[in-house]
Image (cartoon, rainbow, N blue to C red; front, side, top):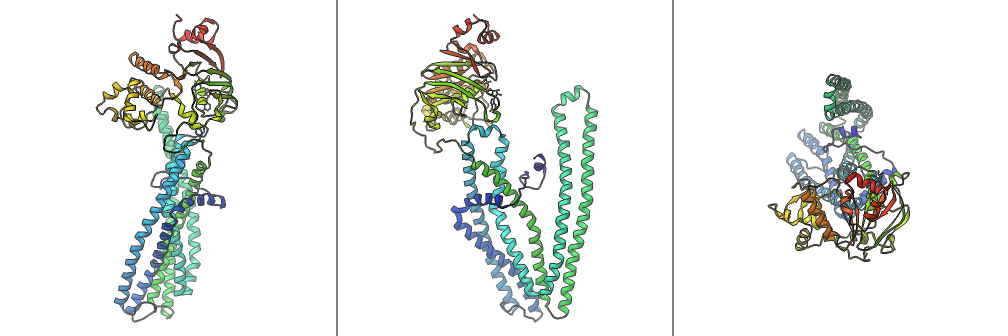
Length: 608
Ligand code: ADP
């Protein structure tokens, strides 16, 4: 993959892998082409324009030939006017028409292509974000992102230009050959005899050269990795005084790159000499033969010129096919990857833009009954084993345990990101599966450890908890979350842009925004994933206060990293390696001198 990316050429700087063309893969492309359907009227109009402009393009050599012949007092094309001004006027009229039709051809092709692409993009994105969490486990964000950008841009290229270009070149090719055959059968036979040899050798040579340049690029990539590694580990390099070793290593790799590139240059030089010889030789040969035919009176000069122009058309359209073909191959690959996403089964969540009314209200009773779970990506490891607990509406249940014991996994299961392999999760005594996903997620809120703010204003970020919220509601939530003060201290207040390109907020501030979000959402069940990194004491107090406000009247599941915050919990579950090993109140648990809770508490604070 690294190599593919390094290959230059594509203007986006990303070289997509090519796919084999066969019935199945072409079927994929045609499925994407079905996105053109809503725009078929315009697409057909564009195709007609395309056909017309290509045909008119073929008339151009006829005009030139007729002009030359007329100048010499001969007349070969009966359908054209007999005088030079007559021919010229007609030629300009035709050219004008051609220009006009070309305009609409391009406009309509691009319009249709872009609209269809926007539809594909939207569908892919919608699919992508409604896919279950499992889907994301095995994939990197970069890869998914590239499907939306690079793969779809490739499809876009095809929709807007490649298809049109292929049809145009095919018309030019076939039309050119037909017109040439009309001029002189002998000449076209002569041309068609040398052409295949030229094409085969060009293709063969071209492949060979590409292979060599790919080798050079691989080597170059290797040496770049070396630089990257060395620079990243520069402290080690220096500490071990290994500079000379690194320089030698890099020097070796660079030397190889140069050697391969030079070998490639040798072949490229040979190739270019060969092509020059063949092309000019071929042209000379055919024109020479044509001159013989002219001297025998079999064809006129005008016809010879026409023939030569058509052979140039032929040459250029033949020359464009490899690239067009490669483009189609890349599109096939790209569309396969996009269709893979479109074919995945999404979660059954509402995709309407309107806020969904809650169909089944959850009061806040939550229970896990013998829940066992392993991540689909690592099926052999049981992350939760026979976990059972209950939280009645309004209770606070804290989950503690060493890192990796399954605390976050429990939260993910409450949110229905995954389903357990065995056991049941119940809301108000009813199986989770009896509720719609949208209903559950609308009534469960999470305040995560590391709060992600989206690029946008603070107002928008808080309103993410309830998209229909009014400004007053947002401000009220911010006030209750102890966030209002710091927000209005910014010059732009609630309109302050945050996120990657905006103001950086501190951890405590981000948490208070998340709390305001959750307050707006007004869930019956709350999951608090306590921040691991400690806040300064003032910030800590503000966050804690905001959390207290948030937890009021709701069932709260607290994933606790600092034991000091959970003494008030109605119940504490101690998880170890996916099993609940202890449960009870702080007082009960601390009394067990052999217990894990007592041990964990001892690590963090002196037991009072
Ligand atoms: P905790 O929150 O207690 O630190 P987690 O619930 O995050 O623990 O993780 C429990 C176990 O599950 C760990 O062994 C972790 O490696 C594994 N795990 C967590 N997330 C995933 C995932 N998406 N895919 C596979 N394994 C995971």
